[in-house]
Length: 435
Image (cartoon, rainbow, N blue to C red):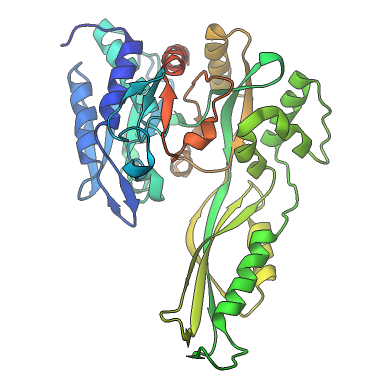
């Protein structure tokens, strides 16, 4: 067994190690988490924690470990993270994206924010537990999933479909993108805890027309029909729809900033939350963004078909509105096919598990204000919800007031502040020991 180390320093070291192991997910089944999964298994084995790799396809690896609690009657908690990352073009970065370099008080590299920092926190905490003989009250299932960045097919979806037994007895879960600080008026810090997620409906639109020579008249041009429909979708102004989570968040924003709360239109309050408004603004309505176009093969040939992909995201309770609106916009002559679909989530913020999150934050930042928020994207909690596990986003970080945190997800020069990571691992440890 290795010597006992300070778990804050451990989290920094492990985060660097994980970044230095490229586990890039290119989508369409092309990914490789094997090396990082082996690292996690070895890191846990070093302190006597047994973990198993579940390979859903060659080199698509998930890691599961169960830490037995002292109270077998208490439902278990799933603490999970994903170990894949999106690609990085080194030519665009100011540092090497897989070097795990420390610079300007941050750890830099692909996955530093999304989400190897959290994986590192989890490993540092449970390694510390094992070395000092700490036993949690409830069972803790550690899950490190593959393929979160490309639909979860080889990760949490595969695990819940093929190995639900590893989550037996668990009732709740925590994972990424929650518990981070957002600084508002007079330096007050709100800590955004994820309690809801938008659903996903990626749609492929296909228009049929009459192929022909590019020099001739053609009133059945598939590309014209498609691009007109795509432009209408891209410019459509979606109505404001406010879920309970959104209302609860903005009531707190209004209270803390002293601004008016008008439930008919919450958009004026977006300016109070800085750069986070780009993500939060998308949770006030459904969205449908054109993302891909495909048509033609030669400059002087009018194609017989043209297609586009729309990234649709719907609020909890508003899936039908998204689908019906898109259909009405494009009309009956354009085919709509589903490329990918996933559910929306909204869970109860008034819960004992959330109380434990709040208490852990306040223990380290007494002036902090924990609030719920609705996430515009999604996490592996969606898959776990389908086997009855209630999930939250809670991977705490105390962030500098001027840091554009949301731009770092999948962004160039992704990095995580070391002070924020130290704060986060302390808060997460206190939470896990108390819940």
